[in-house]
Image (tube, rainbow, N blue to C red; front, side):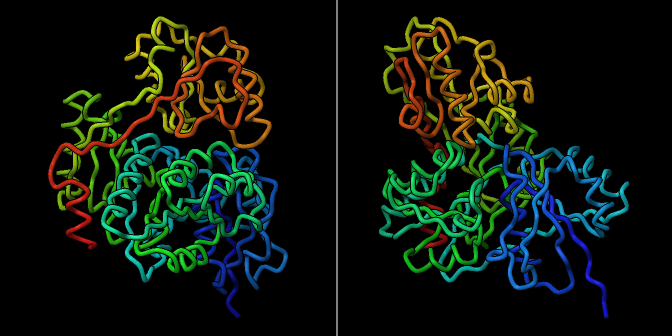
Length: 439
């Protein structure tokens, strides 16, 4: 009898579960012994439940902190380690590979194509090469185009299951109240609320085969709203990838961001109105060299400020999207540009006022300066964010996150929202491409 390979899957509550579900769950050649978890706080120490793990795993599968990787390989006699998370540098991946190989196990990267589920409905995927490129506004633009063409559109979002995995297997969001129903974190609400407010059904969860089949029953077209710069879980008919000229060269230095870059059928080179022209040219040169068959769209990212008078001449704190600043390594975002455009007298450094988990975030990401990342992966972290903001001696709070933070935490100062939209500047534009290829 052939001995099963003992497998450990390295993840961050997303791609890891999808790789298991699509490739390993019913595969008798493998025994998945454990998952490890990183990137997101407090997601280890759980168990992938038997209801999701399938008949081969009647006891479920334990999830450990990634810090225990080396010990687990030895103690659990692991044959193969599968790297299954995203938005990390190539150097980082190879450091992990070296650690695994040193402990005597194989190091594996699955071909993303074999985990892409096929749909009976057209799929448009929107992914990116780094966090904070402007993927959300691109997805929003695609959704409105489809709506204008009379297509019933459902958005399926890359997973963010940070709570009870069994309860989060298939999540359907039809209105804002559903965010509370599923006990969503700030990170989840940032990704779902905008689509819901625009009138689109959103799906997310853990088991994307079930999610896809349910979404197909109520959609003419499905948008895959990619997250953490992962590759699509569904096989796309149009594969859009957003590139950021504020970080030229990053599209070739991160995993699996470069896979997205090389796979794209359509590029959106975003933020050209605020990027240096030479950086835009570097991006275009890399596209020509590595994926010349793709269609290229250049786009502006105009900024909207809800009440500029509250900012002019004022001392402010700028709150930006957390992942964009942390593992996205952006030095600034929409809120910072809004503060400058509206004439704020000073952007106050939040570090001296940061408490508990927010303080730890600054310690972990020391390059984040003078901006407050909107970390909120649970009630405690939301409370820490609230306390940090309220302790700051400022006149106003600039909210550069995709959602209105004042709706979910109590802020004791005037707030101003700053947001981006997408404005294509070249032809063919997204409307033309969708009409030609899908309608």
